[in-house]
Length: 394
Image (cartoon, helix red, strand yellow):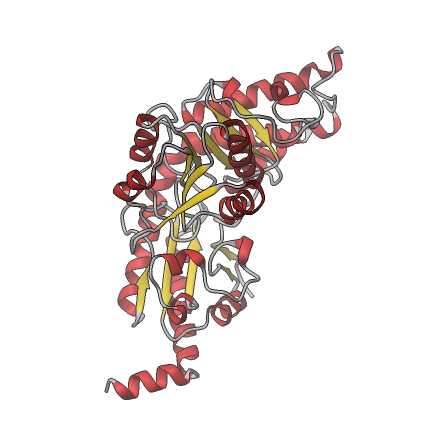
């Protein structure tokens, strides 16, 4: 195997050397507990404050509105469970979509089964967009929360977040968005977009794993999720992960500064790969919107192909890709996202997600498409379904 071509950046990214360098002193030199009062801990406290400022500036928030967590899933759980507890006297109705990450969907299921919540799961169209009209129709006097992801982790579609936020604001409903895939990939301003809570995770932007944040707009009255000490202004107990927080702040600052140039380069490679696949591989289709999608996201379905075989053959060429979310990669069921946009089971099973990074080159792109063409040809040559299809359509 030659060069590794990593195209699974939606699952996780390489921690950048600059991030690792920024973190190292807080493991061995400035290792004081940030919650203590002696001078030795001052460096840790300063580092936390600086990282909070770095991250807040990326989304137009105030530093005191950023609460560090253990990752995106914790942030999603906190937003939903704590909102339900805090506002259950007003109502028990939550609105979400059928294509959310399982950190949202499974939390909603828990709230339905164990806490008596009512949840509306909005349909999406063939490109993965939530209907604003259907959202408005779903609102009741008991609706306390709307939670719609900023951009889908599988098909890359960017939802109309500003409009959703405006609808929520007009009805006096809290609006949360899972922005794990969107943070520092596309511009976000929480005030302009009427976002009350926002989840993110460090390892999606070349930061470390095990660190995330939940933005909570000042004035939103939700409770603590983890109880114990008085960390994070008494809202999230537990000794602060200072190295992780420092790394996250460093990664966010760099990703925000380079976002425009990086997006331009990724879009050029993304569109080149999509064009080649659709034009050179018969019976292929793009999943997600062609324009309103994450700069680095490619998701295609290749008919008469079994996705796992395709991934294994790509891996033999040193190409890392996926068939959907890393959180469900062990499942034999077709993607709930692809089913929600209307794909038949047999087409959904042949899906391929490739997510780029700033390290991806046009040369890499062409190598991958060339190998993919060979793989698809080989797999279809062994497929009775493809053979029958060709015979019937000759």
